[in-house]
Picture (cartoon, helix red, strand yellow):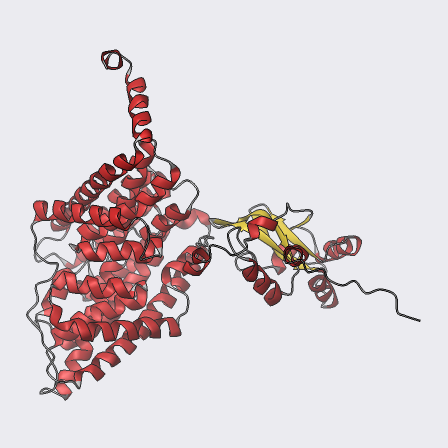
Length: 580
């Protein structure tokens, strides 16, 4: 040891890395506690920085001009800083965490963590109506990724640390240790029985203790005790769940549609796009200042029956508009807090109307506001288990649990009915990222595309005309070809499609203009044969490109129908000469 102490620092670091690698199980346990503590401290710093900076920007009786200028100028400055200095911090924090969990290197950089922290804190302090919880998930997972990699742990160990950091962040952000555990397993991992359950529990509890020691043990909202007045209320709670599912679907559709519109704008406008959301927030903030910021104080007022029904109804619409505009335009911040805000206002509105119509058979608006929070969380985030436990933990009121479960499940299933694609799935797909589903991961013994994948034999250029491609197709033995451009694969085209385009007198068009480069048929290496067969049948192709899950324009190879049939020992019959 004396020789080691006299060695240069780099050799001492290598020595300790080697020891940790040899005792990875013990190191993993200690590291779990460290990650929980650091994630908890990061969230505490998040809260304190946002509150203190917000208090300076929005002092009591703030002027109308400042209500307009703060979100407008804040979004413009943060947009520039985000793109100029922290480009790797863009995007939704939950999606970024899931991508890291499923990516080959399980990497979230320290640079992106700093960017998330700085940009989100500034954005929220300027009054943009987003929340800190989603970015906190990325920060917690990033801390886990950085520490695991710096200590020389294996990639699989680092990967298993990512949900540990995510759970710790949620536990500290909401003061909800159990919800943090369930969210991490339900959303990040996609498996409530994942082997990392013990580590997730330990980190979540550690982060919660750090929050409690730093800021106290008060619940997020102080609410009076509620009780079911009449069994008739179950019908109203069910209606609340149905309306919550509809509003959730509207939120998701609006967010995805507006985000798609922004992505069509020139790349050089990316830094300026958050400014558009800031203008929307500033204009609305002039007339309805209650939409500015996270707004938990307004939620608390509603839960305690201190807000008029008309104001709650107005805030449902105004908050939805400003959240969709600011989030879709690229402002830093998450949607957990806005979802709880809109849900509480929606529940309070429905409960207030019900109480006016049936005053002796219904509870006050606070009970419905509480259930509305969970219903919208289940409908938008699509984590029904987390939504029930989250609302229970942030209020610590068990009496409302049954109405909460009824409304949450109805909101969850009705939202999926109105809008099958989830918000996170849709946003990831727009970025060219296709994460594996729980069904894909559960079939361990299924045959995978990887086993029969081939290199690309020949491809067509996106700059070729239909006429040139048709002439090439007549000389080729294949019946379908990949079309590639400067940005990678643009799609797949078959000989039948080329003939149809030629017959429709579109021979002069370039292939890149006749193909949809966003939704072209493809498969991934870890998907199963039945997925490939289903997509071949739907697209009438006997060849599909195999693309990278994290960049669908990067082609890795091809899979052919004849290879799938051969894997099942099925050889297509080739027609022979007719019998005399």
